[in-house]
Image (tube, rainbow, N blue to C red):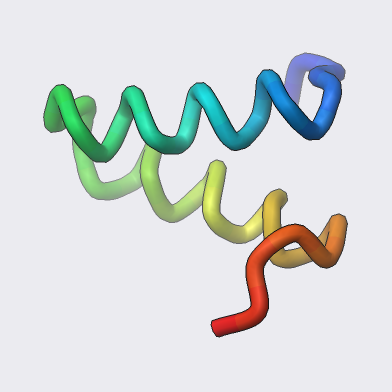
Length: 41
């Protein structure tokens, strides 16, 4: 995965979810967010 700042990662996740970029993209971004400890659930 391309190296992103935490802010860019969260923005990409929100954009992917909002604009329906596909389930796999959303899952990938969400898993990276969880790895970094930015999302609790």
